[in-house]
Length: 348
Ligand code: GH3
Ligand code: MG
Ligand code: MG
Ligand code: MG
Image 1 (spheres, rainbow, N blue to C red):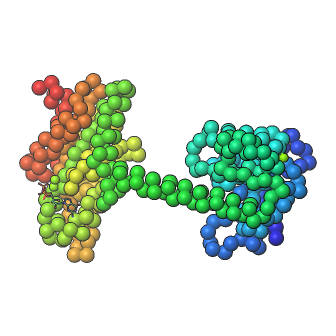
Image 2 (cartoon, rainbow, N blue to C red):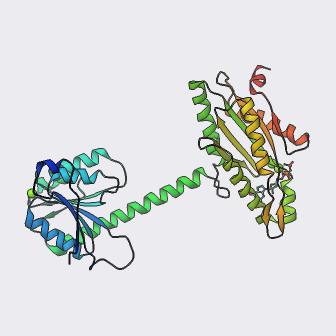
Image 3 (tube, rainbow, N blue to C red):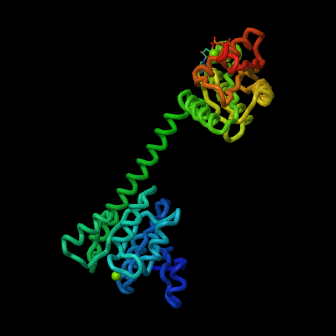
């Protein structure tokens, strides 16, 4: 039973059709699946009234939400929206763009998520069907349509779309695993090095310096020994959070290894770098990290250096300079920032 109809008029169709609605959405409030899963939206583009109406009725009855278009222009407009239906049933011949034309345009545009395209056609000539599939359609249904056939073809499309969504999710997870540190959620060593190299190239193009900080938690082994490894892990996570809270969105913070972090601050000169590093040092040495056996006081030592745009020093050499400054900070008593010039380093 169709209980609600939402009108979605295509922008350029409003002027072409004065009395006719070219694109409307229908949903059923009575026959929707009760699984709690979001209702799947299907776009229908069909200029023949009786055929469109029959399609709308049966799709709504099967629990789909329908976005119904009367011509190819309205369908093309709907399919380009960011939340476009993921499955479309397109008539072969209709005013505006034909079904195969829409298939071709959509596939040429590419992008994600994938839209599954079903051509609706009374053509039964094999060559025409092949042309339709070559235009980018995934499948076709011939008119007058057989309900059972339509149902299984739509379900086959849905299975493809589900698989594609799973693939996209898996790819996203892999990307996350490959670039982020699992414990802290910060960039991993490889990613933060790539960020540093990218920023060096940008710095050379744009002429702005880069502040580089290498920091290491002080006497961290003692934290593990006294409070256990899990508490140590929590301290690492909290140190990461405090670092992130004290940088700008375009700065990079990565876990370089064990209890060492690398911070890349584009546009930061020596004076700026020292005060930014001091802020981070104070933030880490701030309130003790709470733990079941009480608060854990954490401090960190910082080695700082600035990459100058005219410099030719490599990322790993820059890290070595920051590392030497860090060890100087350790030797000098820890919980402090030591700045070392990388320019002097390359000249000496
Ligand atoms: P320093 O002030 O000289 O840096 O002393 P430190 O104790 O911090 O340095 P050391 O290199 O001796 O110890 C680092 C410790 O960090 C040893 C290692 O077990 C611990 N560690 C490295 N990665 C992790 C981790 O992921 N979780 C935990 N809990 N500990 C880690
Ligand atoms: Mg037609
Ligand atoms: Mg340490
Ligand atoms: Mg260390």
